[in-house]
Each structure stands twice: as C-alpha cells, then as structure tokens.
Image (tube, rainbow, N blue to C red; front, side):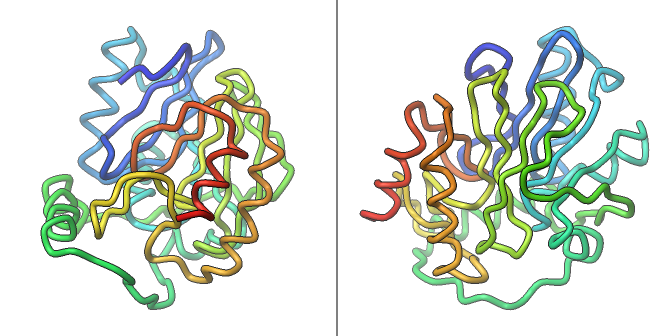
Length: 235
C-alpha cells in the first residue's frame, strides 16, 4: 500500500513493515511475518520493481514478528540484513527474556495470534547472517537511512530515519494499535523488555524532523514525532 511518495507499507495494522522506493533502489525496514513474502512480491509488481532492486533490509529489532521473511530474502537474493549489535543474537536465535503480556482482551489477542498463524508466524526462520549497526550510523542504502538507538523494547531496538521519504520507522518503540487489547491510538507497545527504558528512549524521537511516523503495529502517523510522543505519554 502506498502511503506517500517513495513510501509503501506491507501488511496491515496488526503487523507492518515498510518499503522505500527510490530511483537508486529499494530499502526495506522490517520483514513482518514469513507470509508477508507474498505481500512483498505483490507490492513490487505493483510499482514495477523486482527483488533485484532491493539493496538492503534493516530490522528495527530481532523479534519474530519483525524478521519474518528476512532470512528467505537473504538466502535467495543475497540482500544484506542490518540489525543493531545488541539485537543480533535475538535475530539469529530467537532467544529473548520472558516479559509480562500486560493488559489484554480476548478477541483482539486471539485475532493477533490467528493472524500470525495465517501468515506462517509459527515457522519463522531466524537470520543466519547479519550486518551489525549502531546508533548514529548512516547506511549506504537508498535514502541514506539513519540509525537511531531506541533501547527498551529490546536492547537493540532502533528507529530508522529516511530523510528522502520524510519518515521515521519506529518498530515497537511505540504503537498506534495495541495488538492485545485492540485499543487504537498512540501508546506504549506490549511485550517490552524494559518499559521505563523504552519510555526514556522516546525522547530521541522528539528531535526527529519527519512528517510520518511508522510503527510496526498500528496505522501510520502523519504529523510531528514530538506530538506523537506526547500522546504516548498521556496514554
């Protein structure tokens, strides 16, 4: 789905990843669930591109609902997969601490897990080779993505600023739709390792010049990141 010039979303408000389409090629941010491979193929066909136009995939963190088709893309095309060094082990193995689920309602929670089953989330291949990135890195990929460290949801959670698309992808640093309660609007994301650290990391977003904030779960936000952060903290 096209959101704005150069900017496309794969998936939906339950699980989303993003495609940045520029003349020099494509940068992907996150890989959703394994079944989103078909969404990727469909979106590429829609914009007249192919897998060979993808120059790199950046993971906002190493959780299974963000690494989805990453290993398949790497294995079949050689596209490099970038992840923060502190989440590289999580992306390669799936190992993570057990965190409280927090608030949940039956039907939204069942819907989230049912969607995961439909999109083959129970059969995620972990990423066997990654390129580690760090806070402040500017990657040699289309759009010159800037890595912004956002620890809290996981140790290596990041946001990815794409100046050419006037957008920042935030992964699970925040959400605009809680997958376990169904509540819409800006709020903290569930399954967060260290909520207090994640809240502190939101300060990083208040300085970001972008018109789109793109979460891994929930609708894209059109507006200033600083205003979205204020809504999260009010929630």
